[in-house]
Length: 416
Image 1 (tube, helix red, strand yellow):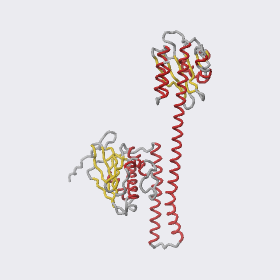
Image 2 (cartoon, helix red, strand yellow):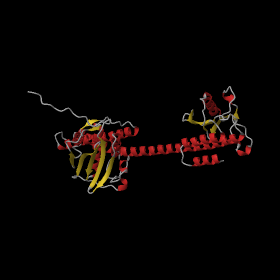
Image 3 (spheres, helix red, strand yellow):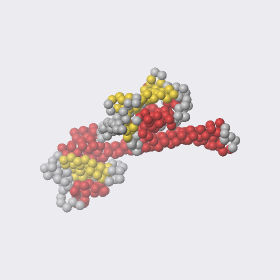
Image 4 (cartoon, helix red, strand yellow):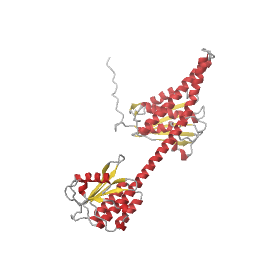
């Protein structure tokens, strides 16, 4: 009874399957005198496998155990279980049909016991209780203990499986919700540049716009800029897909961080013409082991985010310094609106937007992609309010495979 009470306490607590099985095997061996015991569970393909074993004394390997467990799982019958003496102690449905080991192919007489872990819905495993250490057969009281424990374990396993299934359903529901949000956001974001491109192309094709007029130049610029916008949207979607699938593997090489940033600013020169971009990165900053294209994407997304929220004519400033011997700290400051403290961590979640979400375009993926890329590099990213704006910080390791930047060979003057 003490065993059942202790075992029941584990079953109602938030305990792992491994811990419950460990307690069950230990107490069954202790109270029945079994030399060893094991639990076999069923996987997703309904294939039985040995989950956990326990041996209180030397138990020689026995190929029949696995064969017998498979038979019990297949036939849903027990092997070697002593007959009941009191029908009232367990309901007829809770006491499994038991047959001799010879039914499972045993040649010699055996005294171990196999009990199916059966629920009202299906069989979830098999309990094996090895022979007693003293060689005596099991009594009816031992059988009642084994069956009670097996029935409680089966109920516990079914509850755990149902909980796991519920979690999976919730995950699928959340994924479906995210998919709907993504489709809604993307469809809106794609329509805007497509409409602009279509209108500009139609005007140019109509012949109503002179090829030498300023209007023609404006229409061509609009097509070019909106095409870049479309490219960024599709690129963000692909990047987010790679991050979530674990395929975002940085190809880290030694790079000059200032050169990457300058390339980003040059490529976005038309988009940033209404803002001031300042770069405060020392020439003696060490080389940084990063994936050039991915860090360019981080700078692109940070600048795009600043341009959406910071008023025209304001400054977007980048700075970088060595924070620790093995760590680089980069800051992007802009004069956009501050973010409530409780939202600072969540702005890096997919589709999460706080400020002017109804007036600012975007899919809400930019900062989330930054977070995925920086973390894939071994760094971290966060935001902090400043007196007149907002700053984004991220760190990058200054080592590659445990090594610092290699020293370049010193240049020597050639003799004339």
